[in-house]
View 1 (cartoon, rainbow, N blue to C red):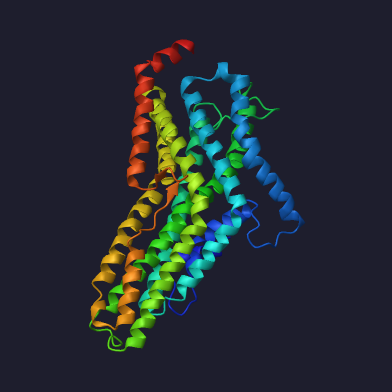
View 2 (cartoon, rainbow, N blue to C red):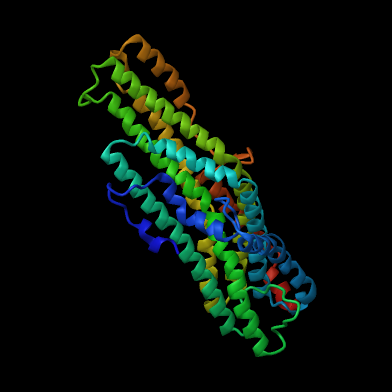
Length: 403
């Protein structure tokens, strides 16, 4: 389905590989979810798109509240908390999916900027780094897939072990509490139907880190080119025309990176803001369930869910933090590139470029806070706050009495 996973290995120099190939598997997942990325949908795919959009953005998010209204009195505490954490995540998933539908064209625009950046990778060493980047990011996406599938499967097995359904979504003609046959029917229906949403979520959750990680590789390549400008081994260092052209190429590459950030920022901004807010609540609910209510077998499914939730924020925050540091190193590299031995035109251009490089590339969540590791830590602190409040209210005793 994905070209037999050939992209997980670095391709040889002789094989044409582009930076956009790093998101090929993710884009294929989005295409299977109904996003018409190539404008080639026939009638069959258009019908499938209607079903996919309706389920992901309407049916799945409202199925949890409907179930709470009808069967709230029948929920044990651990099952209610397990369902609630998934409910919050599906609301965030619906928002991210809707955002991607609106900004689908920006994904292709970002890939076009990657194509422009690839034009500056002319040395064999640079081409190898691009190929290594494509393989590494492809493996990163497949890590999302493995963790999400592991969560879905472990939740199903835990549900069957405890004689309950895995996700507790609402089905109007099935009541798993009546008999075991209906429980098995709903369990496997949920595994495959909700599993489809989990499959789509591997793309909606991973696209920010996939694009940002690829951007970081090109920033590092630009830093190597800037360092080479002042390298004594540079054969053209005594040729003013060659040096000025190399400098201009670096400026154009940097400008393309800024255009890339402008293209991808609106997509990331709103979705990651919602993700941060809901992630703290989800982690808090997970801690309450794991410490106060869950048994040993249920905790394994909770751990896999924690891994999935952390994957939604931590890798992106890590790469955004690294990009800020790399941008600062770009300015340092240019300053130490022996620009003062060149002609006046070169020196004036370097000074202007240096001023631009002192403004690092940053990504923000709704222009309220920066996306970095400090923000991710604050989200974790919020989760502990939620747990502390629940613990202080003796929530475990109250829910046990109610049960």
